[in-house]
Length: 379
Image (cartoon, rainbow, N blue to C red):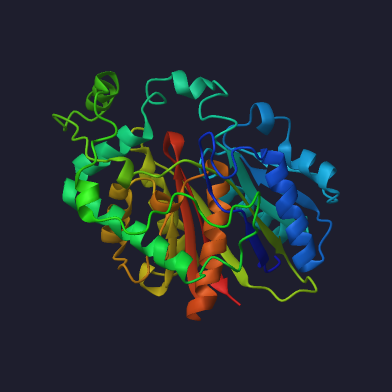
């Protein structure tokens, strides 16, 4: 088995997923082309044994094996494969790349993800999952269900939302995302970050997922111990949708200085109704597999799939604010589905080097009760 290393990470800024957003007029293909060009310029790597791209909505401009298309149009020599495990697609693309390199099947793989929610809206693929009872449950309703089960208050959720916005604004002001950032379409930063927000602003926001009696009924039938679902999450404590892409150069014995070693990865499943707990389970699995405790990990980059899931993660694993999403997260900066995993890996690697820390974890929860994690060691 080969040791597997991360040699470089690149990602676009995250643009608001709406007309007029910073990347709304940039195709997903163009995002990948831009990152492949930047990666080649930074590393000299213009070919790989494979290019693996995660994408959650493979339809229209994101259909037809976008990875292979990007290789063809950018002149990057690689076969190309597009994968889909909902929001965890980017993490799983990198995990697949690491497995191929570890086994000796490949020496160099570029992996990551892309999502243009502006151009290819969520659910536009009309997949069968969305018509199932559990598939019809909005992730926000699932998050409110977790908040109800765990007993979190609206105030606790609001305080977390303020924390992530404050940290994100500080991180951007301090240049903590500069190393991996590739400017595109004139966009220079993650658009959703809102410096100067106050707790009063959060307290004034309306619940975002109330008024869903049909979905609530499905949840209450599935969880008879609950008498009601307390709808507590607002737009300020929910992940903002965005357009973005990210790529990671994975390999072994390359003529480049590695940034980190891929220690391991894991994918877990959870109840599809309380679906967003699977990312936490994946983290636990990868740590157990590596013989590590959560106390030995100094950097956790956990996709902020709603505030309640972050509070649960921190409480259950005993992870303080000094190690958890220390530069803000997807509530503040945006969630681009298939791209998020690669963006979090880049953030984790950069923070490990900034701190001189040893171990870091990047993890994402996704639809239908899926979750994936990668454990990294700074080199």
